[in-house]
Image (cartoon, rainbow, N blue to C red; front, side):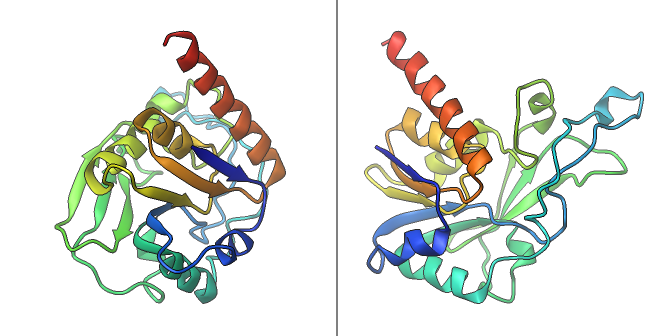
Length: 210
């Protein structure tokens, strides 16, 4: 079941008791100001990128209260951009490095996710360049395949999943396809509406071929 709302994540989490969710997989703002971008004019195609309207939601990281609530309502957490939130997260040996396959001078080789698990650091290689040709509407969209890898390696059958920053909705599609219950929210109404349309289109197509 997918339970997705258009609301503030603190409001959502406040309704749930301690340890209600088995796993939170979240992608909060990194505080880098990269919440929109213009299309590159570089003739080299590997530098091309989708153009997204700037919305100014990426200038601050979440508060201490957000991370306290996240750890209160979930037994385990995977936090994308965890290297930007070290003041609120304890030390861990179980980092995840997503290698994006986009080596150049203007973009990072990958992203890091902090996890609460007592495991070793892992690397996953999924080329993000293939998102350029898709109808993306969110500047930090992550591939569905990436979320499916996270669910396969860090979630157990029957786990209840939480996402406090739905964004493009990729995690919802992954949870639907793999049979996980997801509770998620997105504060931005435009992102929420477009994510719901994307999710509904996907689930409708799945039903057609069942």
